[in-house]
Length: 136
Image 1 (tube, helix red, strand yellow):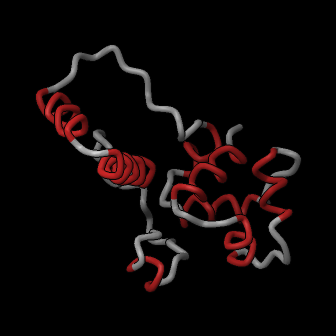
Image 2 (tube, one colour; image 1 turned 180 degrees about the vertical axis):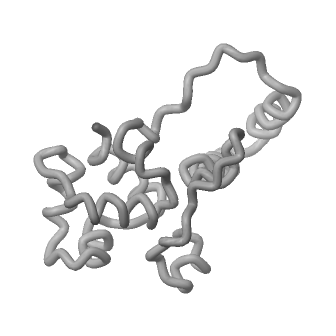
């Protein structure tokens, strides 16, 4: 199970601290989140469900997959993939970081997956201000 690792990865991807996450779920301190991420304890199933919705990730993938690792593929690059790599290589370091962050957020959200699945759901617990700030 990858719950702790994925909580840490997605929390950092969304620029949230352990304190931020603890406050969102009504915990008094960051230590609960720290224990989840370290794998010394696990969140209740209801919290796992809310975390998956908040981060717009399929709950099955959230629990069973390492979301930080790219999917393995033996396929040859498409022209679009080749163009994306060419563009990436021309960007400065900040541009590359922004492009990677956007790509990772798009991937874990499930919205743009090649199989057409829309895994985002309607259960986003982020408020409108945070969405406008680019956290969502």
